[in-house]
Length: 97
Length: 113
Length: 320
Image (cartoon, rainbow over all chains, first blue to last red; front, side):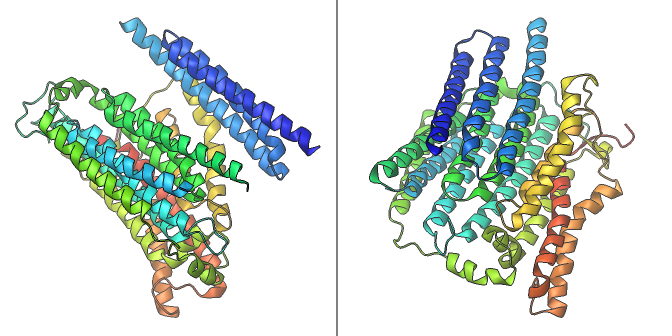
């Protein structure tokens, strides 16, 4: 049982790391602000979610697991807010030029 | 070479970089930034000393850790005061430069204190 | 732990140190200011990971919250305001002589520190056994809280006063015509927009998290400073979304909150002088209760002080 959980952890955390990597490549390679934001938020939210999923089997109590999920939800909220604000600012900047 | 040594060398380089930044960057904001870098390197050195003092079942010596927490808060308040001074200088003279003979910039407001 | 896993962890730590130093180099070497500030915030967050690896989770929390969180907010605001003056100063790039001298000085200092790190005495002197022995005096489980609130309580009290002095320093920079007014510009965010939404949803959660971090600092990593920073951040979020205005500096209630922490600390300290052995001595039966009282007063003061420090000196008159 614990071996299967270890496999889940390794697979999920690796997949999460891959999504982080994809998001960073998108940040570096995409042409403008809006596409970069798209790459970052999609990849990082999914990446963090997979990592949290992978770390859940390692927690010692239900409370720690719920705390991890709360961390993910708050990061989702913060990421969504900040990317919308940056997108509005980028659009204002773009229309001003 | 243990983990504490690695981070100790990292701290030494951070202090060097911060010192270089404080001396060479002409903008006061960049100087404040580099000063914070310097301070964080010093705190990291404290952390290395604390880690090496792990004993009695603790992961690290708690006294240097408490000193660093105090230090981080005081460094923040010093940064806040420095930024307030810088913004006031910018507001009064129109340019955020430390040169004494700089001409007043476009947005300066020297008549109104 | 086998040799293979030992050096794997060490390899990861070397990679972490390398990434941290990349952030540091970026901060110093970047041409423009906003990327340098972004690099500094990233450096600070990575530094929190380093603190966790050094076995200091309380310091990691403080570094993430105050060192890169609040300092980052302060620096981004300043960088945005100073943007118009930037081109003028870039003209003042230092000459080659100054750069060479600075490089020599920094390299010497860094080399001296590196040498002293490599030559540290082994076994390392430590106060951990003394801290562990005296922990019975307060029956707290977190040794760092013990040190901050009991063994070195004087330092913590003076630190609160330093925060107040910094705030007085910031307020003293007010232009005469705005004396006693409101700090910062009046923020207006679209009431239907995303910032106002987050400023309504996040603060209740943030307040709970902040108070929880204070409450749990008795036995687990946490503390009044970290919790107070989160409360200050929630307050700043509400102000930046325009849902509440910054309080006028001359108003009584913020000033009372600012004084609450140091006053309670001082009263407990003088009580220790009157009824106990020395200034800030806690009688063993009431130690935990007294410490909790001080910490709850402290977290309010810290939240208000840090929020007002980030808000800056008054820029508007009272009535606006």
